[in-house]
Length: 68
Image 1 (cartoon, rainbow, N blue to C red):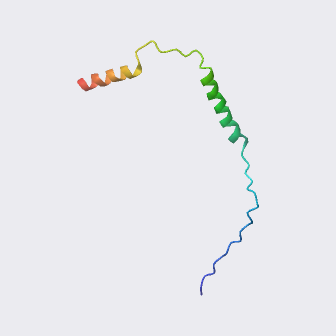
Image 2: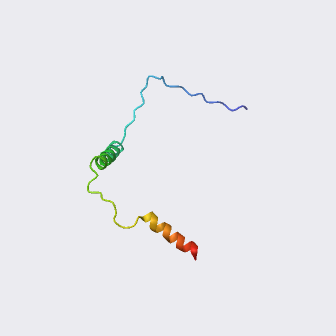
Image 3: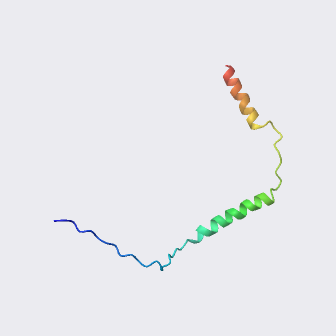
């Protein structure tokens, strides 16, 4: 006995897809954008460090470890 195949009925293309987003899906990216924009526009009192650069200290430690 052959198996029956089910045919799907297609809805007309005029139905618009309805998508509802939760409130945080729009609000959180907007807040993140505003926060980053404020950091770019007003960086505050950012000063360069007065100590030795971290990469220099790291390379110095690596060289000491390799010399042993």
